[in-house]
Length: 104
Image (cartoon, rainbow, N blue to C red; front, side, top):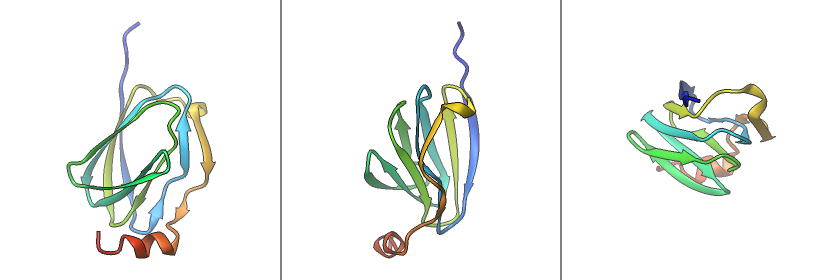
């Protein structure tokens, strides 16, 4: 069977974050096209700027937050809606996180 990769372009607003989630079957690679993103991977925080890349293996909890208006390109092994396991919903970045990274 031939592997099929899927790509998506995400627009992330400053002060917003996606849900905390993982995939049962999918691997993802995120490339920051523009902006500044706070990536959370396995509970660890990492600042990502234009040109930075993060690889996320299946089963790894992750989330990204917009410290600036940002564009992220996702390349993944496939897409299947029921593969996403959300642990926390998307929404506003908590103020304590915004304050911690205001000079990123």
